[in-house]
Length: 123
Image (cartoon, rainbow, N blue to C red; front, top):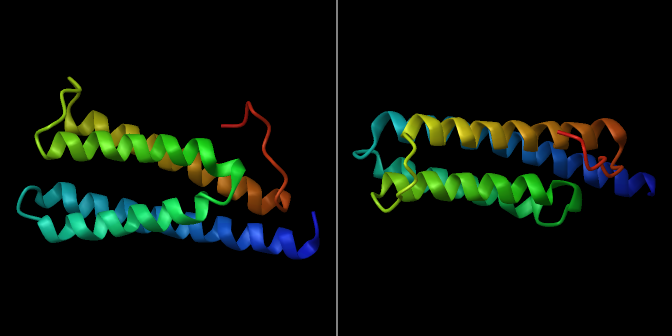
């Protein structure tokens, strides 16, 4: 990997980390005010996109990004009354936080390792 590729990977990983932080803040705002906080829903949706977009071009982040998107979708379906997960909103929120932690950890690993692909067992 060239030095410019490493810098690009590091910059993208930093963007993912910042986007995850924004997502977690917006999600907390949404959950505190639901269902009256519909405007917060739009900000959460934008935050999801800001995480998804940079992850789509990074194979090392693809699996944890998909796990994050699935966990987010499960929570949204629950909030809109369409989910039949049998789990509480707190359990679904905890599941999202686990996925954001994994995604953040992998992005940090990319920054520290200058873009090498993490081993399969990394979590």
